[in-house]
Image (cartoon, rainbow, N blue to C red; front, side, top):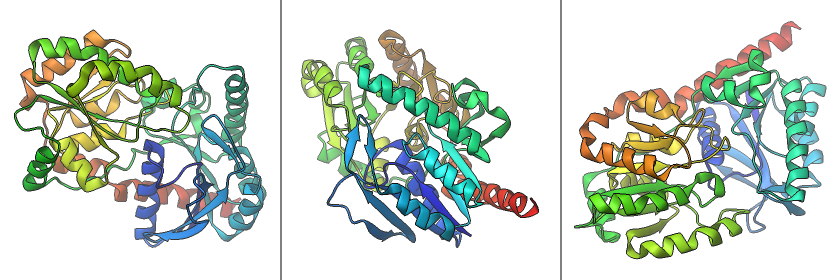
Length: 386
């Protein structure tokens, strides 16, 4: 089977969406399928075409940016060329070009499977309001054109302002999550490299610095944590310069400065180092504040490394701790509740730790790819019968 996957940002960009699609694409390729990813050349230094782990990546030059989105005048022509060469079109929302993609798929007789990763909330401004309204209309048209809408969880689908209107088209497929098992010597070296010896507890934060991640609420929770644990530190992994988030970064810098050496930034890490990062943490925190966070893959990554999480009780985001048994959820935007949950886990950490094997099997990219494969084959059979 030949699968065309379309999304706005692909690797080396880092976000939950890009990591999801990278894992899915590589897992489908490993199962013997021909996989092409159609995406933006958001950085001009990236090649317009390359092979990555059996996946063909086609990048279209960017002419302009609109908030977190991009304008690619040539994307339509490239799509007209690629769609006929593939059996199935897998589109990942949100993205500006999705309606044109879905329409091309339908006109050319290809099954259109749309994975909806999150609702989109842009920073307040007149331009962003117009863009957000256009995207909502775009998403609705895509949902109408799609054969199937894929959601991470039923919980998110029933609360999403888009998916809740098309539940008859929704199929739930758990997201692909993998991380190498951290070796004790690697963890020890990581802790030594970042001067963690004699400090702690270590509170992990694995996010890019974006407004929807709610990092300020963890920063505001720190005084209460330091009262009980004077050696506590925040260990932050992830990109600091997220696209379209310069204002947010400036806004939280004073909070970071107040913590001084209680905030340690280790940068964006490759998977082996991320495993060491999570294993170095006593608890991991995901303080997201709205439905742009659909699930929180990092919660499962932390669980794979033996680290429980505290996450916001948002639709979808509250599910990983239930599915793994490793952690607690709290109301979003509540520093006191966040601090209390962190302290509860630190006080009885073994109660929140589960064996790795069952979690790895539940979320393996191979299992996710197998479910997509079955869905694609089902849609192809229906198209053939029609």
